[in-house]
Length: 418
Image (tube, rainbow, N blue to C red; front, side):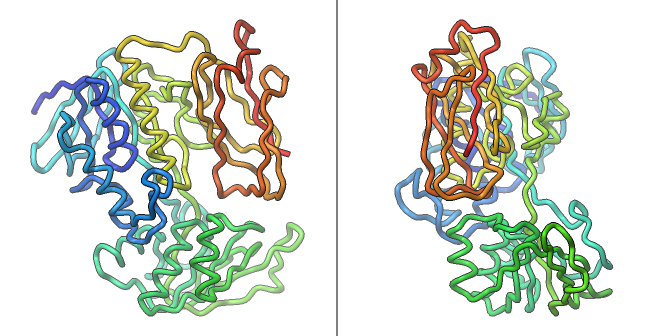
């Protein structure tokens, strides 16, 4: 077994992992990135469509271009990257964290570090997670797997396609499948509003004349050897109208029914998870409930833009460096999700520093107001032209916004939307 010692280890070599590692290196700490794929970049390497980088680079890039731009920043640093390496065990019980990695190139490695940054990303929910009735024929894929088959492997999974769920990957694959000559018959969404970004609804569905069935439930996948069709049932006033069910013939079904943060290693390390996000509970330093273990990006909560992932990961890396130097917040306040807010991340703010909070709303509304209360006193009110659950909302809070909480017992910051 190869034994290696670093100041910090970042698990995951996507945009989040690379951004966090760069901050640790910039602060003068040795850092290793462990990535299970054969190359850095994460899911971006298969996202050949554009729309990335408008915030981070002020220009529109494809996924591979975005990943390459971030990876180029690693040149000249002391960061060590282990690709094709899978972390199988994480012991974070002591001051020194121990990771056991299995690699083809180096065999079994034991990495030791004082700080660990979790940046494993997320995975797709599958048919088993949503329990669609029917047989188990060939031709049922998650949208991300289909994306990899088409963009990386060069395979066409089918010709007549129905997409279940209106998440962004599914919307993008509706366009991609149309481009390669397939017929996308419909996107079916159980909710009364889309789950993806508005721009993807317009560019991937409207521009290609692909129908979007909102408030429709997939009640059966038809076919034994190969998919033959999908039975769709409308939902009216909260009731499933089986008398109005209809079948769309197809040979392929793509599932775009949500993402789940990849937190098996987090659980192994004893990290407390937030049931609303399925990601770690994090304080104002983006540190989890386990001292010295930090989290950022889609492993913390599912983002809608990679630009926000990089922004958050930079903060996680900088905070991990501060922690390694022995710096701690002087005082924190608990963050609470108020009316019409599904969750807020992180779950605490530093009363003496700049903070950035991300949240998702529970409602679709025009002319909405985001309100921030500190100990029941309104300190900030922000107007929003339009809000919907699929689009993340960010708000910045500084020491001036939080001055009423200084010195108060158990101070609380509450975010609500009306």
